[in-house]
Image 1 (cartoon, helix red, strand yellow):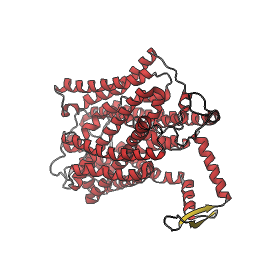
Image 2: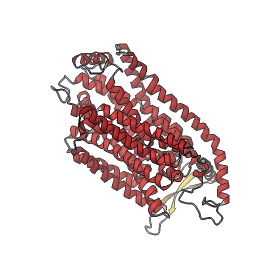
Image 3: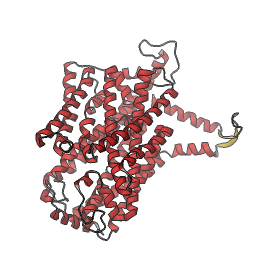
Image 4: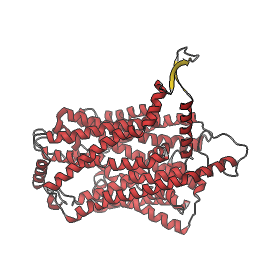
Length: 588
C-alpha cells in the first residue's frame, strides 16, 4: 500500500502541482458536497488511526513502567503537539527520520540479543522450542496445530483485514498526500517505493523473532508472567513484544521497547496531527471561513488544529479504554471505517469517468454497507452485538471486505448510469498557491492571466514526459510488490499445508534479519547520501566555504547584536539560480 501510493503521489504532482491536500483535489472535481464528504471520511480515518496507536502504546507503557494508563494516554500526544506546533511538517520529516533510524537500530539489536539468550542460543534451537510449543499448545486452525506454518485460518483472515484496512489508512490519510506534495517530483516515486519495500522487514523480522521468543521463553523464570502463560487480554493489548524483550534483555529490553513505542507512536501521531491540522486550515478555514486567508492566517489555524486534535485524540482514546475497547478490537475493526473511500479516491485521481454522483454516494453507501455487514455478522454468529462479538475475526473480515469493495461496485454502476468525462486540465485552472500576484488581464473562469495560462501550459508539456516515466515505474513496482509480497510468496505456502523444516526456518529467519539490517542502513544513511548536496549547501550557508565567507555585519536595530549572514560570491549565486530554475520546472 505504501509502494502503491507512489502512483497516486506522482499522478497528483502531475495533475495538481499547486495542491496542498487531497481534499483540495476533491473539491475542484466534485464541488462543495464531495469536499464535505471527504473531510468526514479523512477525519474518521485519522481519529481511528490515532486511537489504535494510543490504546496499544499506553497499555505497553503501563506494563513496562507502572504509569497509570490514562496518564500515558495524555502524555504521549502532549510531546507530539509541542514539537509539531513549533516545527510543523519540517518537524514531522525530521522526527520521522530520526525515530525510524533509532527504531531500526534497536530492532537490529534484538536480532543479535535473541540468539545470545542461553535458552534460545541459535536459530535451530529456536525451531525446536517452537515445534515443542506447537505440540504442547496446538493452535486451532493451523496445519497440524503448529506455529511453524503459513497454513493458518486465523492468519489469512487477519491478512485480509490487514491488507484492506491499511490501504484505507494510507490512501485516506491526507498526511501521505501532504508529504507527496511537499517533495520534489523526482523524489516521490523512489521515496515511497524504497520506503515501502524496506518497511516490510520490520513487522516480518521483529514479529517472527519476538513472538517466537515469547513462546519459547514463556515457561522459563525469565518471562514476566512466569509461571502462568500470557492471558488473551495481555495478547490483545499488544504486550507480547515488551514481555519478550524483558525476557531476552531484562531492564535494557524494557527500556528498548519503551523507546520503540514512544518513537513509533509519536511519529505516527505527529503525521496524523499534521493531516488533521491541514484539513482544518486549508479545507475548512481557508475554504469556508476566510477565502482571503494569508499564509500567516493558515499557520495560526494550523496551530489551533494541532492542539485541538491532540487533546481530542487523548480524550477519545480514554473513552474507548473505559468502554473496554483495546488494541485488538480497534486493529480488527478499523478497516470497516477506513476502507469506504479507497476506490472513490483512487478513481478521483486516475479515472476521469467517475461522476460527481458516484463519488459522493459510493463511499457513503460503502460505509453503511460495511457497518451493516459487520454488526449483522456479529449478531448472526454470536447472537448479540457487543464489544466482544464485534471484535471477533469473522464479523470484522466480512465488514471490512464489504466496506472496501462495495464502493467500487457502487461507483462503477453509478458512473456508467450517469457518466462523466472530466478534463484533467481543469485541475490546473484554479490557483491554490498563496503568493499569486493580482492580474488585470485574466482568462475567464480560471483566475489566471493570459500569460500565466500560457506559461502553465508550456510547463505542463515540458514535465509531462518526466511524470509519465515515473508513473510507469511506480505502476510496475506497485504490481510487482503486491503480487510478490501478498500472492506469489505466501499463498503457495498456505495452500501446500507446509510446516517449516529446520533448514527452511533457518533460511526464513536469516533472510528476514538481512532484510531488516538493510532497512536500517537504507533508513539511516540513504537520506544523508541522497540529500548530501542540500546538506552541504546549508553547511556552506551557515559556516562559509571556499566560495563564500561568513560576515557579522547585519545588526537588527531592536537588539543591537550582530547576526551572522553568509555572503556568497557570484559563482555561488549562479548555482543558487540554477537550483531555483530546476525547482520551478519541477513544480510546474
